Image 1 (cartoon, helix red, strand yellow):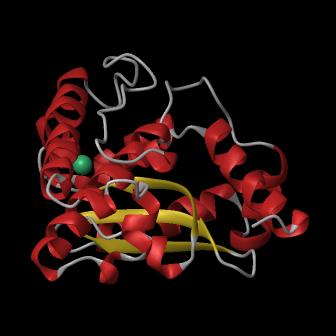
Image 2 (image 1 turned 180 degrees about the vertical axis):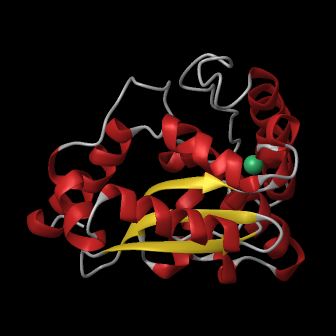
Length: 217
Ligand code: MN3
């Protein structure tokens, strides 16, 4: 992710081919989603910051964490577009070609501990993703108490101001699925479960543990 980077933000390439998530997420959707939707957030964010050199050294996460410090004239634009960049980079990283990764290790154990089973987790995650009214995301995240939690956010809001550590997220804006799944969000969610990047999820889960037990954060 571009978390450590700052203005001018760049469009990060997808970590796999556009067609790599077929047949669950179609190639055309990935092109539009990455090349147009994400690019627009990147361009709008850069445009908002272009006359404000004092914020051009701020990484993405800092902009989101301290959005209240920014001048009112650009606050909403930066919040929405920095959120759009942050959420989409995480969303694209949350996916991998079907069958390439599987749930394992400490994350598998923790999901079983906190939700009973992976199937029980899926059921709850799916209801959460279905419950998002309009546009937004459903997340699996860790609380500061190190419990897994399922959260939803509206529009391009993020978990950054809530001090939650994201494991993965699903984009349930219609642009994420409309071409293939039409208006049937439930089918998209079922398909999406096949392309979760569990290696990335495990890495994010473990990186939180290191922070907590190492006291480095
Ligand atoms: Mn999107």
